[in-house]
Length: 405
Image (cartoon, rainbow, N blue to C red; front, top):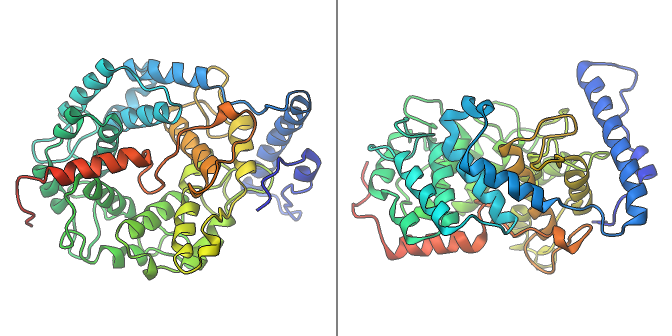
């Protein structure tokens, strides 16, 4: 893979060809490319004078993230049911930037998350809200990032395991909440939660791998449920779930790799989430994290490809740092969009993946060495050693009750 910085004139030659058939989709694609090409043209001029460009505006990002952790503007009222997600996104972003809050703030965060834990097990999006697999995954990840005994001990794992059983169906699938529809995101969240907290059992995930594989589509990606369209977020959930279950041999890995590599946009350098869709910063992780997982799978049979990354790391880093940084901190979907906590988290996560690749060998950092972020575990989107610490803590402290349906 050629990871040298791209030339503006070469990028311009890759512009979308609508083949004289204009649709809303093609018009949007042409408009996005025009904006991004202008940004790259200006970047190329600036980089000729400053070899350390592009530059990650770390100070602005950490400043706004710490402000968000203490209080959010009224525009976030619509995400009242996602407050555990907001905590995870902010803490993970700060970890990536290597600027975590002080111990007192982290302890207060543990206390807040404890108020989000439901008496029937799992976590809601906020205090007194019904438990949900997504918000439980976010809370467990946030507590793993904090990584103190207080954080670990705040999780009621016996009731958590019971909650996992209540959202499991007989075919091995998982609903995101009681009475909800079965969704591949539910399976991933359940598996990730169970693995980190040592509440995993073979019985709990009987047939789950087979159900996940039924979501792989003719394109090679994974859909949210059988028969639907392949999507970057669902593909990550499917692949990561199979890897955590050690059942990747069940899926068509070659078809998945072919689908994934075709999601990196030729002009933009970032990833789209689905065929014929626009680039989006968050898919820097959802699509990008699939590649180190695929590389690890393929290297089991061929040690020569253990360091293969399979996507253009330089192009992705250019897209993120040139096109996705808000001037006053935070990251965005694409030029013209507003910053938000979700895109800040997953775009930074994708930047880390682009820099560290498979995690083997030296990192590849575009621009200033100061741009380097901390590394993430591609299966959990938490730092590898923080996953290790949590797993081993919970192994040493098994849940007080036996697994039962």
